[in-house]
Image 1 (tube, helix red, strand yellow):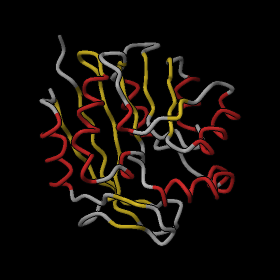
Image 2 (image 1 turned 45 degrees about the vertical axis):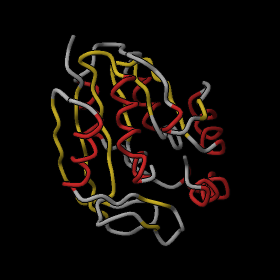
Image 3 (image 1 turned 60 degrees about the vertical axis):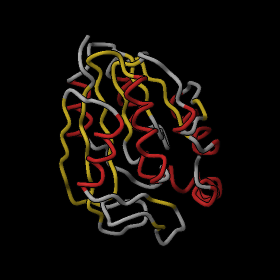
Image 4 (image 1 turned 90 degrees about the horizontal axis):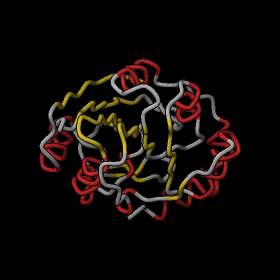
Length: 199
């Protein structure tokens, strides 16, 4: 279930959050799209302001943007000109519907106790041979940032343990990079690129 305090932050700060300058994670996004079939079906978890979805749509992909925050979803709808589904990670029930799942700075808000199940749901939602890219803020265990938002803050080893427990992936790669976030703090990012076995 989504964390109430985190949802409250986004409800109260949606417009400011969406307007905050943000660079697309171009390298990871391009690598993700390159792995998919042309005009493939993409599920986006945590669309936020909708910028990543806009890029994927402009590239000709069929994108289903989702977010647990109704306020963020409304802002993304204004940018995208299409419906954004309001959905928590534990509500994902799709089976073999998507060629790719994009979860940039999204699953990092999932309760640590639910993360393995959330990842298993994503695996089920992917078609055979489908791809998932997800990013997390690295740390030593769950906590809150200075703005009150909940994060699962996994180590690289802990994160890989969640993924391996969730499903038998055909490929599972983790890379690390330094960057920032909305709170302006230096951040160590963990990027997971993984794929489901082909049929």
